[in-house]
Image 1 (cartoon, helix red, strand yellow):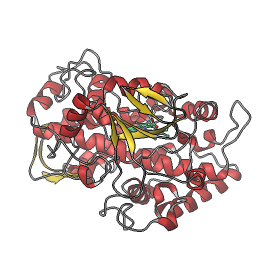
Image 2: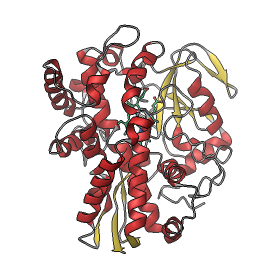
Image 3: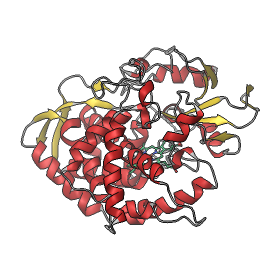
Image 4: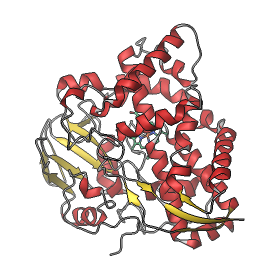
Length: 421
Ligand code: HEM
């Protein structure tokens, strides 16, 4: 089997290893696990406890909805956390109902489909500017010139901070979420002792600077300044509770991390597919697709930038013939679910004519379904539309490279040559 979008065809990789994903996602391993052992006990190389890997589409969808069995409130990364670390680092993503529901209701106001739709012109303006600049040359790195720049510039506008700060925020966001890749941080989690930073988001010292930045924002809001969506999340919830200042700092780091890389790698995967399959561009230009929203969903399924999130069993239960014990870590592999032919027909092809696309890239089926989903989709959609409008041709001219991470799945360098129309 050829695995498009990966150079890794080893069916027996160690899923706890960051290196296992450094040459692309191990789709062959996921294929084997779905067929042979879909609820798979996975040892953790190193000192952490092992975990259950859930790899089938139907199982992920079913278990993600069972929040009474699987909690988000004991950590959401596969690595272990002590109670103290978890308390210091938690955001509303690491809570269960009813606390989660109350904060989610507040934050959703700012990120709803309707609210986000109002940003379309701003997104198009940024995309046009980036493409104008990039297209001055015929050959360039599409990640550096397009994919990496758009998401944070847009997020900066939404959270009401100056454009000039976006580049700095991208660098800090990279150091946080790409904490396993030496290109983005000196504090690689599985290679360097990060004990000193264990109370910080992603065990990353970059969070110290982001906390300072968030403190400034808090002070400005204390003095009555309006900072886009940030004022909204600080309002009291319907339960009368308010996000504490510590929680706000963690939430700000979550936004900078989540709002940055995931959309970037969706755009990178989109450009990678356009550059490697010329029929995609011609189909889009001829309107042979089910509309931009469906095409965007297909591209994000294809990319699946967030490979997994973890839960913790609240009590003993059976699933798929396995006995899962209270306290066990259970990892939902969205990346595997999105290549499961039982859930998605013809999953290794990009299909612009899918009648339905029940993909899991945003954590569908669970209460934590991505808050930034509409923003991410609108950005990817506008990039697709503008590229289709302006490109005569696009091709990859040299090898691409992948982020070293078993958490974030993405192309970090993509040399392309284009001809504009
Ligand atoms: C294509 C881009 C994106 C992908 C693939 C993605 C993926 C995900 C996934 C899988 C979850 C579920 C987590 C879980 O089940 O525990 C999630 C949650 C979340 N995402 Fe995204 N995300 C993307 C873009 C964004 C953006 C642009 C933002 C912010 C501006 C964002 C903010 C969040 C937040 C705050 C949560 C937590 C929601 C909650 O716990 O209720 N994401 N995302």
